[in-house]
Length: 509
Ligand code: ADP
Ligand code: GLC
Image (cartoon, rainbow, N blue to C red):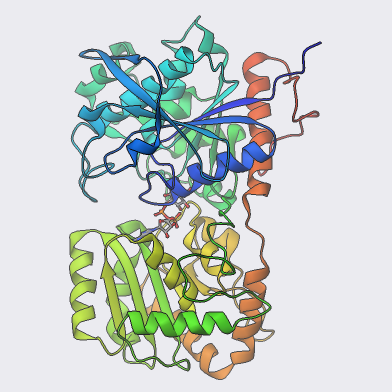
């Protein structure tokens, strides 16, 4: 008897770190496949070949694939690389008309007008590639609206073709972006107009590709248990709570992990000094270096607050903007790294020019600086309006930088609130999305720093001892894949790994 085949999983995503990243989606799609690989799964990834990637280092595969587009067949070359430190293949679809541009989605705030077409190409192209390479995936895992057409194509154009047997898993990383466009654009998907109905693509008079994925996918997931519950409510459902409620048995909340090699304070190549929970001197050196880099007074006694993130309404930094004057009247320092909405960039940029004594903003995207802020700051501010999971608070915990977060989504699932009486906790939580509530919590953190340094020290060590590695999440995804396989095929997966198929973890509501 030949050895049984391992489970074959194909990921399709618009971002995969370190090749392409605008936020946490890239981090997840760069790290989760490696963790799945360590479990013995045959995992592969498909992503577009964007401008600015190191094309020369990628192997160009022979031949081309033909992707049916509304205007005719698009011939795409394919390049092959691997996720660093692994043997996980990454296939890059090369089609310059769609991807040779300065941004992945367009300038933050205004996406490219043909994004539906660009990501239709990715979704359809990934399936054409799978067929061309005879990959025969058992499960195809699509991420966010950009690849929402994948489960739809598997059920429609692949009907009675080899890929039809593949189960589909669709992960919501951010429900606020659903790929909504004019109903007249249905032709771009290449699917018949009859799919433009309220059960699939039509949503309040617009075309909504995420809605169609929620309908067509074998199983659904999102990136934390709390967000999985929240999005079934009108308040957080962004108009799709009805369909999410109707599929609540198929919707799973699996908390993201972090890449503990990339984000390791003991070895991080971006840091001027290294540290661990057992020896924190290096953290003091990182703080001093960050203060110097920011042009702030180098003083170990002043608490230093850090912020890193996309400057979009999601992150709630407008609330921070509204209490910055108050916060900067205290003996504290704040550093911020971010890019996004022009108004926010302008506000923090000019405040930084005026308040060089206590505040420094860097407008832009810089991976090394994000690491230096996580390491050098004492506290990390994340007042998100909503947060499906959030990775920055996880990096903060690992770097002993106490997160100050709004009690929403994955932030609730990962940060344990400080209890002043006992000194327990790993960070600070607040609920009201108001400048007063945030300022009060920042003030509470500052007074804890000055008045109860023993508590800060204990919380820091507790935070650093948390385990958010991908191993746990990968195990939960494997269970999800096996369940999706069983649903699609009507029988359990026979080969390794998996063996017994326990119920998938963390079911929502
Ligand atoms: P989201 O995906 O909503 O942006 P996450 O917290 O999940 O939020 O992930 C954000 C990721 O993007 C983190 O790795 C963070 O360090 C990174 N990031 C965001 N903005 C910047 C920036 N301006 N420079 C460098 N890294 C950034
Ligand atoms: C999204 C969410 C963020 C999450 C990330 C990765 O961008 O905004 O909360 O951590 O996806 O899943």
